[in-house]
Length: 436
View: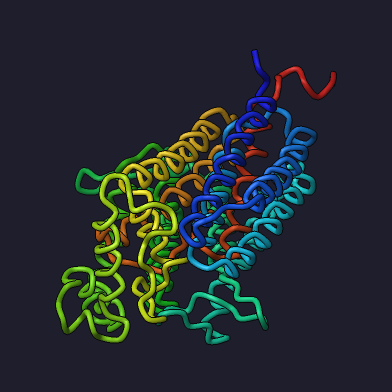
């Protein structure tokens, strides 16, 4: 049978060919010609992916064979789509892709024992809080939300790294307390509740999510963090009642702030009635949501083709923030419903492999860590795709690996590295490690 590493290698080859074909399609649509640069782009992409593959082959020989190729496929699609929107942004995206691979390699080399993360859980949690508050302190406002820190020519979104730090802390906490939360729980009105001293963390995380919603004005991150926490809580305890209580707390908090905080209410109004002229033409109103709807409807089943979507008119963007918030709408417009389903299936495969990794892990912390990272990744996809398709209010969360954004690519490659470290340890032969 073909080894996992060889399957991983063979999976990278068609991905590089698809990247070359994507660049060729964009050049044909833009200049009505194609040149050997497209093969150069594809070859460069393959070489970079092969470097990451070599680190996996040496450092993580037993890791899952599909996580890395799927991440590479998503990143390649992202570079092609950003290149279609703006070649200069695509060059920057390619540079961040290299940095992301470097972060991936560094994580696989330096993090040899996951228990280090478990031991420093509180330090990691403090760092996450600091990262999330910094944009508010430095005034990094993006579309009314405090999302980024401006470091000269580089803009960095700390929430991307904070999501990983928060998952590490919650996974480490629940790995220690999960048995106590189940053993000493009590029933109130037929509902199972954990002991009060262990119920506190749920209140803290709920307050944390509400802070993101109001103080930082980041609805997407609040959904991501709290949803990831509930997923971990359910896996750790097996109690659906805890999830119901957590959802009720979040919905109550959201409804309260929607009625009392202006920018939260404005987001909901734009979501409910995006075609209202008063909202459509208002600054920060529903125009972006409405244009995203029109772009997706224009794509049809098979799409207009790469490079064919109308993104600007007379120098004015028709589709605001096409490279970030609305890149999914560009995908649907140019690749159609079929292309959108293919993209979502790639995300679904990544989530499936992440959950499979969690199921195979025997160490409680590793199992919860893989579950939390996968849940946060899945929720991030849901938040942005759901916002563009009007399932939920639109937020400023990036589409993992596909949207333009350096901090997102680097953070998600670190996430992939952590999942593969867990996978390698879970799949390692039991007799490996010598005789005690």
